[in-house]
Length: 474
Image 1: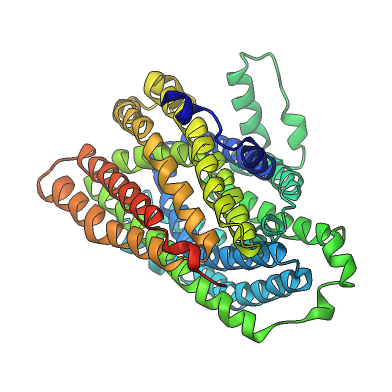
Image 2 (image 1 turned 135 degrees about the vertical axis):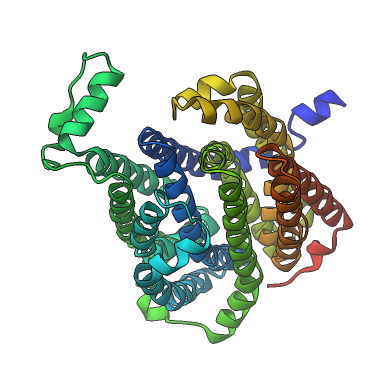
């Protein structure tokens, strides 16, 4: 039994998952490291800055999250058409995705930029935190368009099994993000002092930020740095298009134009997952609001814990995306048994990754938290929270893999309904009632969050076992 759980059942498919997932894992890890560096930079500005960045970032993600449905539709169609050896239709799926992403993201970017001052007070009323969050949200919203187009490219490259592109693009853009953030957050003098303090005066690298000869802009600087790196990511993905054989064979993407029938299928695939992702992001924004009612320190701790948790599942997300591609490809070539085995091997790899992270969180929570903040109140709350998240890693690996496996098969509606229903019908009302009404404080909402993940893992496992996903045609 133990051998069956730990070792591959089909080594060839196990390798195929690793082959596709590894570049995405590395690129996701680079993104994780850079986002952790960003949080560490902002975290040392104080709990108000950390809370403002968390809330502003969550709301910006809510605006962007619907594009995840478009990305999924592009990946699902391209992987299925790749299995059917219909390569030109892969490009039409990309064109359709770029069209949908542009139509959605341009007005959303404008609204977020112009009306950030009106949105934030609904979620944060703290006088010191709200103005910082408004600045962060307004600037971050301007990057929704760049990120939306990048998401579509991610779906396309993953769908045609060219995941190595993510390595170059993501690592480069994240390095740019961290470099710009350091200069813009602290300024030349500030970054020099910070580096000197961190290295006991051994290194002074402030000359690398010679252009930042101004006072640091704090959270606003972090938002500007992220905006610039998002634009770079979009153009970098575009650059790699002309290098793909599938594009060369078709003499560019412009020649093939759009496919109206395929566009309808992509909208049908994108709407459930996109709507669900938006509902989830807005739901987590309300979770943040509940924490802000409990207290700003609790909100800042939540932001820090969710950032660390996000870092832990990003590598497993790469495994899930690889799983979705293989499931779609094998269903396209009518090899259903291989689709099933791809899911099993992906689950195994996801548990390897997230289980390892979970053990680290359980054993060394204080050490991890001290990397991001020295605030004793945040650390005290965070130790308990990070240990809970450590136990949840094993459950979350199941949720992620099965969710993405179902979307790869073309079933985007069921997992969307399940997760949205659990968040809005269970997690949020229970969090508010136990945390605010019953004065349960910081721990109660996190316990509700844990139960929600357990329920989702059980429901998705039963759905996968039922097997009706094998009959889906896209």
